[in-house]
Every structure is written in C-alpha cells, then in structure tokens.
Image (cartoon, rainbow, N blue to C red; front, side, top):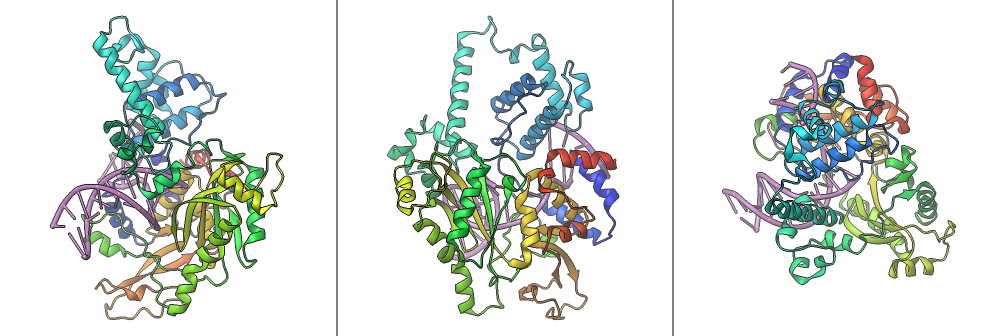
Amino acid sequence: MIELFRSFLQQSQCRNRLQLLSLRNGAHRGQRRFASFNTKTFKPNPKGPNQHLIRKLQKRYEDEGIEGQNAYKAKSFLRAVKALDMYPDVIQTATHVKSIDGIGEGIARRIDEILHPGSDPTIMISTPKSSPVEDSETQEDAERQQVIKELTKVTGIGPVKARKLFDAGCRTLEDLKLPKYFATLSAPIIAALNFVGLFEKPTSRDKVECLERAMTGILPKEFEIHVVGSYRRKQPMSSGIDILLFHPSFVHIPPPADDPLKLSKTKVASPRKGLGRSANNRLSADAKTKQNELLSKSVIEPLTKQGLLAGTLSSSPQRWQGFVRIPMNGNSEYQTDEYERLSGIRDKSGDFARLDISLLPMPSKGAALLMNTGDSDFNSFVRTTASRMGLQLNELGLWGWKEVSKPAANTDTAEDSIDGEAKPSLSSGYWELLASRSEEEVLEELGLDYVEPEKRNFSFVVGRSRRKR
DNA sequence: GACAGCGCATTATT
DNA sequence: AATAATGCGC
DNA sequence: GTCAT
C-alpha cells in the first residue's frame, strides 16, 4: 500500500518545501521501533468471498507469532488481509493474488500453502504421521496461544507482557489475581482488570449519543464537545469512545519540541521524543495552574461524581483515559437518577465502554479533529503526505520549519502562538504553524480535498492512490 | 531503506 | 539519580 | 512483509 501512497504523493507535491528536511526526518524515523500492531479491532466482512482464506491467514499470523517480532511485518500482514477482504472474487490460485496491492511474496506463499496443503506437510492441520511428541508440542503451542490471546484482552497487557506471564505460569485471567502475578501488574493494568469482560461488545451509536447528552448537561457550558473516532466516521458500533473538548480559555499551541536539525545530528540516540506540550512560557503561573486543572476539576471530577466515569487508566492535564458507564438503563432510556448511575458502577450493572477525553487548544480544533477521527490508515496517509512535503503534522497543527540565517536572531517576530525561541540549542529556526483551525484548512495546505469522515478509511486511501497512479 | 506520531508507564543502562 | 529504551495503545 | 528506490 505504501507505494500507492507514494505515487500519489509524488504527483501531489505541488509545493517544494524543504526537501532536505523530509530526508532527515526519514532517517530519524527509521530508528524507531514500533510496539506491536493491533489486530484486535479488524473484523473481516462476513459475506466476503475469501473468508475461509482470511481465517486461515489470521491463524498463521497467531501461530507464527508475527506480532511482537517486527511491527512493520505485523502491519503488512494485516494490510494484506484487509486487501484480501476487499477482493471481490474467490481466490482460486495463489498466482493471481500477487497482483493484488499489498500482497506480495510472503502472503502469496502462505496462501499457496493453504490452498495446496499436500505440498507442505508442516502446515497441515493434522497428519496421521505426526508423532505424539509433535502432537504435545503443538498442543502446548496452542495452549500458549490461547492463554496469550486471553491475557491480551486486558488493556495494557500486550504480547510481551502476556508471554512473560505465561512463562511465569499464569494461565487465566483469574490467575492474574494471585499475589505472584498481581505484584507484577502496573496500576493501569490493575484498573483495567476490574472491567475486563464488561465491555467486550462494542457500543452502539445511541449509547454514544446518550453519553454525549449526559456530558453536555454536566459540563460547564463553555466547553465544546466533539465525539470523534469511529463514531464520527459513522460506524454503527464503536469499540471505544473518543471525545475532544475545547474551552475558550485554552488557546495556546506549543510547537513540536524537536527541531529537524537536531534530529539529524542525534539520529542514533533517543528515537522517540515527546512533544513538550507542557511547555507554556507565555502564561502566568496562576493561569498555568488553572489550565492544568481545567480537565480534572471541571470535567473529570464532576463526571465521576455523577456516576459516569467508572475507572481510570491514565490521567494527565490534557488527556484522561479510562472506563465509562453509559448512563442508560436497559430500556434505552436516559438514566437521570444519579444514585442509580453510581450504584450501577458499584455492582457493575449496565453498559461499560472505553472512553478517552482530550482537552485541546481551541485554535487546534481542525488538526485535532482530523487526527482523532482516523481511521489509522487515513491518519498514516495524511501524515505521510505532510512528511513528504517536509512538513510535520500532529494533533495541534500542520507545521513547517523556518530556518533563520543568523543564529543570534530572535524569533519573537513569530506569531503569537509560537514559543520556539525557548530553545537553547544553537540550531536556528522555529516551527511555523501553517494550518490548524479547520480540517479543510489543514487538508488544503496539504493539497488534498476535504474527505467526509465516513470515507476516511483504508478503501479511500487505496482508491485515491490508484486513481492517481 | 521506509513504513505516522504521539503520551504514559515500566524497565534497562549509564 | 538521571536518561534511554521498550511496551502498549490509539 | 511489501513496496519503491
């Protein structure tokens, strides 16, 4: 798929910004090792013509333990499965699958092995030949896989942690509560453990809307509330609920923390640096305190007291992640009684869901909506577009690096939302905010037309790229 | 060789 | 103790 | 693992 992006991107490079920077950034990014790629959310179309093949491939994916080896590999595997899922015809021979974008040598080989099991005995499901030793090995393997799959259901337990737990002897979610294992769990994992199983089914749109109404009633009216994520993409169900908040008192946008020159010079070290969002040297100490407490005091606290928020995974001045109890009773009516809601949380009755709440600067609304609506394929596509143009895109805005000829030059001339002059390094330049207020503005700056949220998905990216090729 | 980019928590290294 | 790297999630 | 360079 990547090449599709690229070919499209090359043609859409209507601007000629800082070609060098993209190379430097590329070198930098190459150092980063990604964590495992999440395949939990992908669900093949049940009516697709190649369901059988897809299921076998997913099994191979698990059996081979691709997750955890190399995240790019895992990502490619999922991409190939997605491409196969979209393929309209029944796959009969392995030869013509290679012509599908996203499917190459490796997947084609696996498909061949699945379609013609005889040619490779090692992948046969059960052979009469297999010795008892082999049987017990595959059985152990199967158990290991099953346990890891189970443990991974807990938010915060990924393949690595799950493997460690298995090797230590843990076999079930119940086992996790034994002191031996419990002691090794982080606070977020312990919090998640209280809710595991309570939100296995995704959340319907009417429940999301119920939550939105409840929040609108509880939060101070100055807050702007936007439900983003899969809900905004008009998906019928959401595996998690994503809400952005904007408040008129919060308008400062910090620029990216690292400048591109610094990245190129120190590319070997520290591949992952934070955004430095807390840097905020234009506000008084008092104003900073107020801003840092806005989310916790005006949002999280009341929502918790009112019996909406049920558990916390992590909490910072600008983002809260945790579990919500949908304030709705069994009959799909809004549950107005605060006491009922609180007791629903206590005895775990009702519907629960993962919820993320982010507080973002008002002028970043467009960029924030864009980056938080997804889906991840669309996000990658948009970010790659920016990167190829030598720009940086994050949820606060689209940024361009401005070189300043004289190192001594002060960058105070930058517009108000910039505080790049705080950098002590010798590198001279600053991040310029090119667009952030609306999605249209950001996309336009990237040479892209507006895309309806419901169209922001893998199919769009593929179709778009193919058209331009 | 590139593959999005980030926040938060834990673990390894110096 | 401070910093770097890793794990995880979205 | 897949693709472009």
